[in-house]
Image (cartoon, rainbow, N blue to C red; front, side):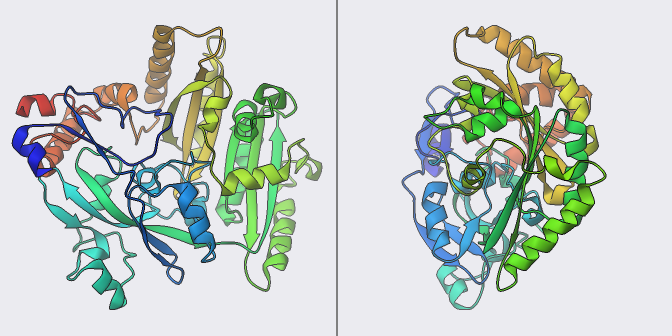
Length: 438
């Protein structure tokens, strides 16, 4: 990093292994940009079963981490069916939504502490790891690196997350995990409209009955469950347009009893909204649902419908989801699309995702695809959508709609931590930052 500052060479840090790159933040967009490939850094330093955390390097993938944690009776808090080669650390830094909102206490979860090299070339440790001594010495003295805030009341980790590698390069992190359940029960509720499912989801989140919980339309659910021997288009015709998936669990000697009384509570809770017969009535293999909640995929599951996709995602309140569905469906005659609503942050907000399918014959023209994307983003912005993770095309629209004072503040932060603008220039609102300093 110091060499790059000296010679004015832009750097692009990446940590995931080869595979389909969707958002463009890990693709060079500046002439002469060097890729800092951290994917070979695959060491899992320490698994702490007592404190439910793991210390790892940026190249560790979900495919590598899941079996390692399982040996200790732990499971990772991860996004829905991540790509096998996806970096665990990268997923956390980009704040990808995890499927268990009741363990998602803060938008920074599941990342706890981290080591970072800022754009100045300075090394830094965040959270409780910022204290004196090496990480090994700190662990030996009883520290567990669980507190993300620090040093003092400063929380630089929150600046690093979501910055798309534009402020610093993270070289290690502690990641929050959870214990594996001894007993589980999975539910699949179908409906012809999304309204009743949103109401059920709200009640389940209110009482924190579930581990995993999310809503999908038929196309995205079919794509999620499809494999090499199945056709997502065929499966989507067998299920209703909207689907609520959730799973309950229990641990220890009373695990089975806990799952049963939660089941009875859920039946009583949802009976005014839906008939009991609609629970688990879909022609879906529940072993497959269990599998996609616990493992990885060799590909991007969203690309299974048409070969490729362009996703639009933002945070929204639960009572506004129907509004965004109506906005998106105004474009349904132009392009196939799928929906995925993932509660986050204890269910206080929803990751609202609209996937635009493209890639197979008849192919939609690239210009038309971009026009649909831009129009949809614009309408969602005007309706109140909060784009907390804007990439490339979306970023241009989001920051154009922002107050200029906010953009100036972000550029001031960029100047503090990466004064020469060498780290991933062009992302977020830093389009001209590197060229001005060059």
